[in-house]
Image (cartoon, rainbow, N blue to C red; front, side, top):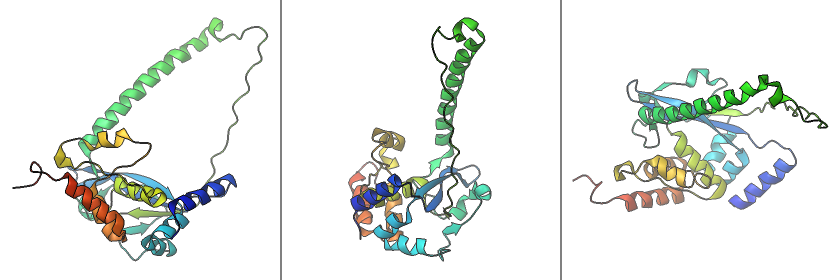
Length: 244
């Protein structure tokens, strides 16, 4: 199999030539609503088929078929009907990488507060537009040209819904296939919020639950990742989080 470095260099060369890099989009749920017993927040990950097929026999087979025989992978064209699925249908209700609804609402509240502050600041700036003193240009200056507007390019790719894996776990797996790097979050039983672990190195790693990755690695046949996830779980166990 090709090395991650060689594959990434090949992608860089394709991007320089203006060639399309995205072949498939995997869609996965990242949230879990306990009151409604459903998975929520469908998110997408864009991948290059050549990279994944070169790194994994499982993905080579999955991406070579028009439609997978595995019921946990569903090809679709319109995601409007996939926003909420029953937690029982998801197939892995205890997934540690699914964010509970309460955690999501706290993050959303913070994001909304930041948006309100930004909007308030923008309103203050816009209010000066009615002041001729503020908006008049200094004598002798040239008016600035309007920014160049580029129309978004439509990219045709295959869309696959992954039913039994959380977005966070799949994202960490994709990063491993691209870079050979993987990071694990602390177990919830250790007490430290997972979001703090992820934020520490957000630009260089996408941590996931070792329990969730162990399960996924067994499914896709990546023994090296499976062993590393198992080691992470074993190293996280102590007398405080092992049931008596």
